[in-house]
Length: 226
Image 1 (cartoon, rainbow, N blue to C red):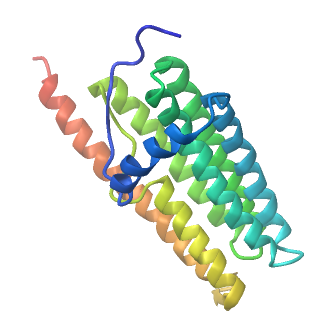
Image 2: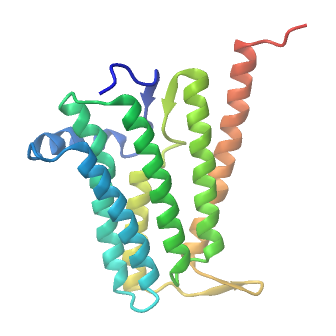
Image 3: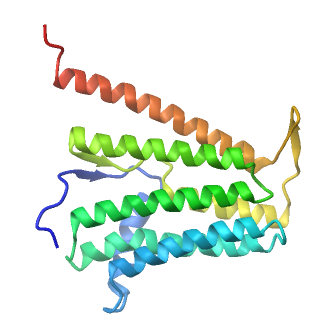
């Protein structure tokens, strides 16, 4: 275990962040001793893969949306608890954890986005737009961490947990009231596409706002030399 990790301060402004700060340490404390953070990380990876497969298989039977929703719950458990468990047990490996956590986040987002795009509920182009927007936002967060020493893993009130809750709600809605397709020009779409496109555009807008703010902040820290 490394003695020191990347020097950064973690901040979270997500809508459900307060609930998670209360719930996650309690869940971590209740886990058996043989469970270690890497087990939970692996669980999150497997769950993300399962979610993608379930969304793709919903082409055959919409009941696979239940499996996708269950996978989202399992993914939350693994993805949210690995770092919490390390902190509760005081066995942090900051550099290792930082690297592995964000690498697996990138994989999970890519897998789930592609899975959604392969389902009958979302266009592949929309799923890929979400993936690209998320990855660019992530790159910006890592650059901020290096530039400012502050790791703010979120934009606005929407974070990974909130996104999972929204997907579960949409899955449930699609099961009981299948989304009626409509056309935008010659392209067929559903409410999943509308919300997905709005999410991608929203992320792009948040990124632009953060980039302008960061450049102004950096310019004040390092004024132009004459």
